[in-house]
Image (cartoon, rainbow, N blue to C red; front, top):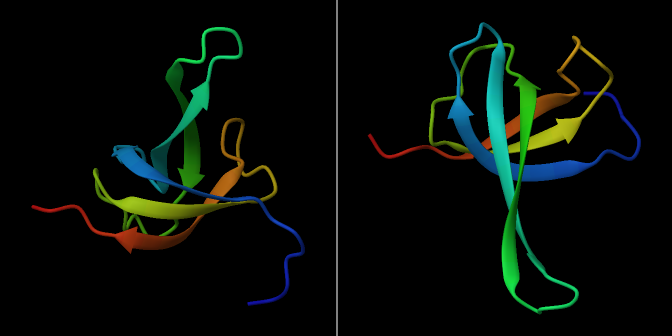
Length: 86
């Protein structure tokens, strides 16, 4: 694979794979409230290009930022870190 420069890499969980060549990945992060110091869970959902339709719901995956593939897809599947238990 050719060098792609600096990319943002994220790790998340697949929550949907019903679309063709697309998976929805949720990335959760914990942040502390600036005033009250309570920890909050923030969630981001990304549509990811999965060319071989190899993602299953519950898989832990690594995604990388890429050029726009469609209106919503700006990320591609880098690798599947852990398969979901069946």
